[in-house]
Image 1 (cartoon, one colour):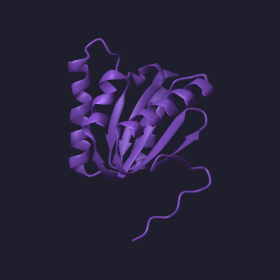
Image 2: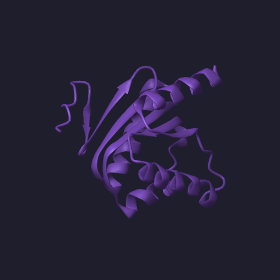
Image 3: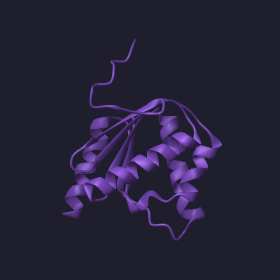
Length: 142
């Protein structure tokens, strides 16, 4: 089965793709392996979009086509704090095992960096569930 091509509104981010939906939604579709430079580029884009929007943004990550995540990419969130731009995150589309591993990594950050503020995070099976999480977070903060 061949996945449909990304529409005109999807922008390249290395091998991955992203788009921004007004007013505050950064969506990344991960395609293949993730390197440290990929993660840095995602954090850079998140910062730029939040700055341009003038607000914190939500980050949705579609990991349905995720390959391997390098050790360096996994360590980057320990050294670079996206919370200054991030209102919340949801990861969707991955297997149960991928969501479990991602959840464990995210739970390790507060243990390793106890002073870091953590934004709301959800691991969802579908994009619809991830979008519902964002809507709930918007509702809670209004």
